[in-house]
Length: 395
Image: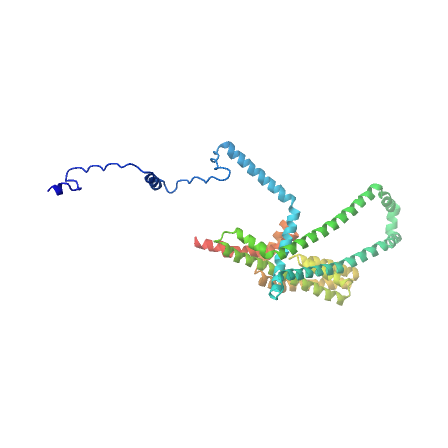
């Protein structure tokens, strides 16, 4: 009985006695702190070399306005920087566009066993040969014709004086005397300024061409490294998809440039053969002009046709009419057979989209906008088809 009464279990109807408190130990305090501390409690920042960071600033109206004003000033400064560097940025964009278009040639040469440096050097040599050939075909005829005009200018003036109508007008209004009195020192200085401005324009154009050429070579040499560096900015979870879509866009841009070069080469070759048959002077120079203008979508072929037709009319009436007929027929073939088939195979853009894109690009960015309009539309179509449309279908 005594053993049963000394049992630890409390008897019925009698409350259990509280256990005596035992002295607390440091380990117990740390254990209690770990169990009581919430999971989302802020962790104190580690003390660094220069001490722990202070408390964040309190948000008030003054601080909000100050930060907002700084944001406006930074946005305006960025706008001024972009506006002032617009010319350089345009050259960089053109060089990058050309490097993307020429990269398929570099890749093809590497598949044939060329190292990347040798492949880039080969493509660069081809570009230099094309530029030198175009200049050799165009510049000498221009210089020759200009020299002939200056040499024959006195004869043209004598012919005007022998004309009865011009002689009568000169007797009435003293046209030659007024023209001679107009040549003053101010006009001479103005003409000198025009000559200096023309020289500045020529040297500026040469500088821009060399800048684009050097940047294009650099972008072609470092194309893979630049592309991989850009991919590292993308989150790792989306990097593979972004890589596939971007590679497809770059492939379409390269295919567009190759297709445009092929169409321009075909137009220049056809014009050269036709001008030799007709007998118009400087057929190679005019063929190069047609090929260069044909690189501009939609309107380039018409501009080249106008230039060649004017030269044909200057040669003879028959040659001029033949040039007009040739370009009308050739443009119909190019616009409805060659161009749609090449562009549909390379960038897969419809004719309506290509025309609208070219018009909008010319209205916004001029000739450069016309050149990049079609590959831009192809890239937007790919992004819409692969990203936007699937997301809309999931909703």
